[in-house]
Each structure stands twice: as structure tokens, then as C-alpha cells.
Length: 115
Image 1 (cartoon, rainbow, N blue to C red):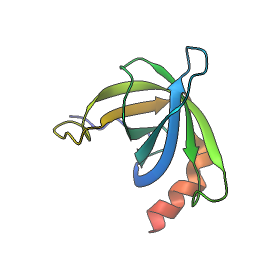
Image 2: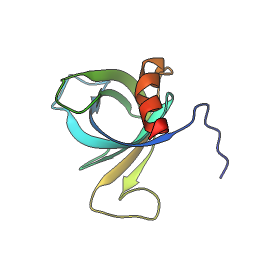
Image 3: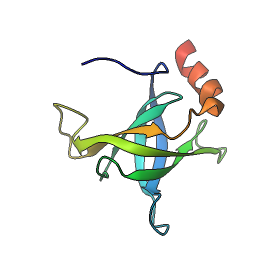
Image 4: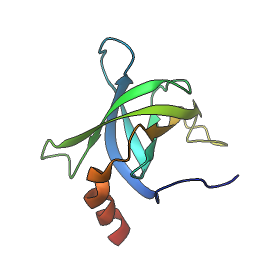
């Protein structure tokens, strides 16, 4: 499989909430962003959405005590049961491409690159 990514990825464990962007706001679904770049994220959650679904995301920034989050919009590229292709932990995975590069995440990603 070719790696056509425009931005490097970082392994993370950031809390994220998502909801469909094409419907009236519903209760957001919590998940964990286990992989993040300026161009997208890989999310594990109790449920997922189908490829092509537009999402509104809120990514928790920092240690979780400061209440800061980064808002982004994206579209589901791949999804399925488990941790990803070949894994199943009772959760769902989604690979999400952001609609626009999230340059505001550069400082957060720099912390993960340094550690």
C-alpha cells in the first residue's frame, strides 16, 4: 500500500468527540485519536461512521484539565470494527481526513515528536 500522506503522523492518545456534520447536532460520540497529523486522524470509538460521512470533531488539547479543544471538520476515509485492519477490540476505527490542513495543531504535534 502506498503512503500518500502530505503530513507526517504522530502516535497520540488524545480525547476526541465527533458528530455527523451533515445532520442536526446530536450527542457527540467520544473516542481516542491514536494517530494525528495536520491532514487527518485515526480514531477508536464505541461506534463509527461509514466512509464518505462528513464529521465535526473536537480534539482535546493538553492534559484535559485546561478545557481547551481544537475544532475541525473532516470526512471518513475508512472505518470498520477493531483497532484497524486485522484487529478487533470491540471498538470501531475510523481514518478521517481533515477538510483543510490543521496548522494550529503544529505545536501539539511538536510535543509528541520531541517525546
